[in-house]
Structures are given as C-alpha cells and as structure tokens.
Amino acid sequence: MSTQLKQEPNHQPSGNRIERYFQLNELGTNIKTELIAGFTTFLAMAYILFVNPNVLGAAGMDMGAVFVATGLVALVGSVMMGLFANYPIAIAPGMGLNAFFAYSVVLGMGIPWQTALSGVLVSGLFFIVLTLSGIRETVVNAIPGPLKMAVAAGIGFFIAFIGLKNAGIVVANEATLVGLGSLGTGTTLLSVFGLVVTALLMVRNVKGGIFIGMLLTAIVGMIFNLVPTPTAISDIISAPPSMSSTFGQAFINFSEVFTVQMLVVILTFFFIDFFDTAGTLVAVARQAGIMKDNKVPRASKALMADSTATVAGAIFGTSTATSYVESSAGVAAGGRSGLTAVFAGLFFGLALFFSPLLAVVTSAVTAPALIIVGVLMASALLDIDWRKLEIAIPSFMTILMMPLTSSIATGIGLGFILYPLMMIAKGKTKEIHPIMYGMLVIFLAYFIFLPHA
Image (cartoon, rainbow, N blue to C red; front, top):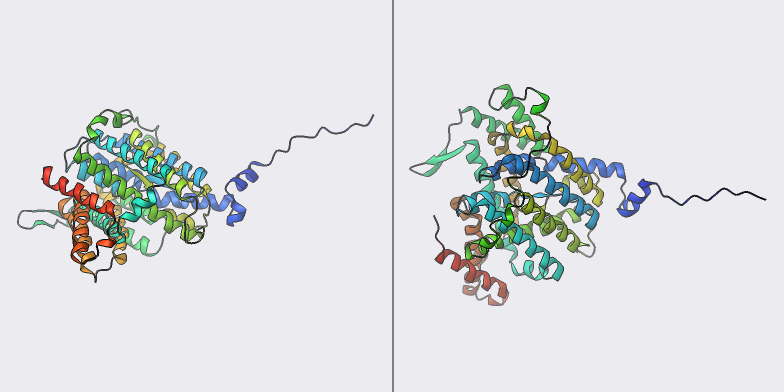
C-alpha cells in the first residue's frame, strides 16, 4: 500500500497576509518601509503627548491622566484608521481643539471640564451619525471655503499667542493690554532658544523637527537648572498613571450639555474637527497618490475612525481627536498604507510608559511647539481672496478676534454672522447656503442672550 504524506493546511506566512490586507504590493511599499514611515509619523506627532496635558492641565485636569488618555486615543484611533480605512494617517487629540477646550470653554466660559468632555462626546456622536447618514458632504459644502480657511488660520494665531504667553515673551500690560516680556528671564530665554532651534529644524525639513526641538530645549533646560533633571530610571520610565480622575467623567454632567451655550461649544468642536479631518484626508491622500478622480476613496471609513476616536477620547478624558497632517511626514518616508498608521499607533502605546518626562517637559519647553504649529496653520491665509471685501471682512474678523478675545467660538461666531450679511449686501444671496442662515441665528442668540466677559 502506497503511503502519502498528509497534506498540511495551506497556511500563508503572516507577512503575506499583512501584505494582502494592506495591499502593500499594489501600493508599491513593504512592511519595512511602513515601519519606518510609522515611526517617522510618530516622531512628527509625539509632541502632542506632552503639549496636550500641558494645555488641558490649565483647565484643572490631571496631567498624568490626560497623558495616558492622549496616548490611548492615538493608539486606538490610529490603529482603527489603518485597519478600517487603510490610510497612512494617524489620529490624536487635535491642537486648536485642546486650546478651545481649555482656554475658551473652561477658563473663558466657566464651564466645568467634565461638562466640556460631555460636549466632546456629543460632538463625536453627532459626527458618527452624519458619517453613517451621508449628510457630511452637505454640511461641509454649506460652509464657505474662505471661512474654513479663516477658522484654521485664526486657530493658528490663537495657539501661537498662547505659546508666546506661556513662554513669557508676551505679557499683560496695563497701558496696552499686552506687551513684550522680559527676555532676560531664564525660562523665557529657554523658550526663545527652543523656538529658534525648532524653526531651524523645520526649515531644514528634519523629520520630527518639533519633537526634536522640544527634546533639545529640555536638555538645555536641565543643563541650566531651568527644568527638573531626572536622577533615576523611575524619573524616565514607569507604569502609566491612573486615568481614574478623568475616565467616564463625560457622563457625569451629560444633562448639562443641552443649553444654547453648550450648543455653540458642540458645534465649534464639530466644525473644527470636521474641516481638520477633511483637509488632512485630501492633503495626505494627494501626497500619497491614492486619490481617484480627484476624490478620496474610503473617505467615510476614515471619517468614522476619526469620530470614533473622538468618542473614545471623551470617555478616556481628553479633548477632540482628529487626523494629523503631520502624517505627511510618514508618507514622505514612503508610507502608503494603513500599516503606517498602525505602527504609529503602536509607538504611541509604547510611549505611555514614559509619563515621568512630563515633569521635564514644562510650559517653557512646549511653548515653541505651540508657536510653530501656529505658523503651520496660518498657511491657510493663502486660500482667502483678500481682494473681495465680502470675503475679506468676515475672514479677517474671524482670524483677529480669536486671539484678541481668547475665544475660538467668538471668532467663528462673528465670521458666521458677518459672511451672510456681507454677501447679502453684495447681492450674492444665491451663493449663501440655507444652513448659513441657521448659523447666523444661532450665533446672534449666542452673543445677545449669553453673558460674555
């Protein structure tokens, strides 16, 4: 009787399964390239691990808990983006959104941070509903392009202003409201050094320039005893801090979000995140060469990953999550698939064990990052037609009033009021979407009936 070898099940190597799932061959990439790209994206975004706790800490939140929440959101959101949408785009709590949360909502409006987290949760759920229903295109198309750009640029100026204040470069002045601070102060000099070094790195297109700039600033700060110096391994690596002070707090004051004031807050969270994500998707997809017929494939899946990360972030205890344009650094390093985002998310997971470094990364160290991010966001000014007054006036007021009033919502509100009025005066009523009239009424009620400092 002849004997035959028993046929083994046809198990494909794990590498092959990964290549097929992420379509690596079709996209002209491989696992090694995606790993390098993921690490590059992580380095370009890693500053948020320390800047976000610093910003939300100003609102009274525990910095250790926010650090963990930030890393977890980046881990969950980025992995979901990679697995679900197959895009090389990483997700983390957004700059600008955290500033709005801390300085406008909590400190400016006097809303408890727990209620503000409830607002983030509602905006994320709203985003999910719009994504599933397909209404998102209607909403995004209703907002005029110039106003979207003005909001982005205005947030950039606001973030830079916060950075300048944290650095001590800009200080309060009784005669002129603000003035130049004492540049001879040690921590201010440290921030100036960090700003110059980070700017030079960015100009030289150094990958992860903002993160490296923060690292060099912290080292110089330790040399001159301007920031605490780690003296043991436990000052660098430890188990992640507890999230007990922030986890689930979004549900405690949930009923308090159903007010006109919180409606404005929720709409602001929603609009900023919506346009941030849409812009990032287009920019990175174009850079990666994966756009088809000038459209972003699988956009709904990418938006779903982003909105789900926002809901998760609100539950963990951090401000709105968004897709990061810094992902373009990973694309420049060769990343083409969602595996890049997965690797970036895993690196954020590893970073959770470095929370003691929060003591080293002080506001003087993070201030340069805020200023440089502001510079990057101000590039949106290029896409505003300043020759048309009906566009220039609402855009200018949107941008100017954000830093002057320390309120992103105020800038958005004035822009949404002025734009329809200017267009009506110009005789361009047909160019005004009906949704803009609704926004006009909402923001008029906001300014008239709610107290403002």
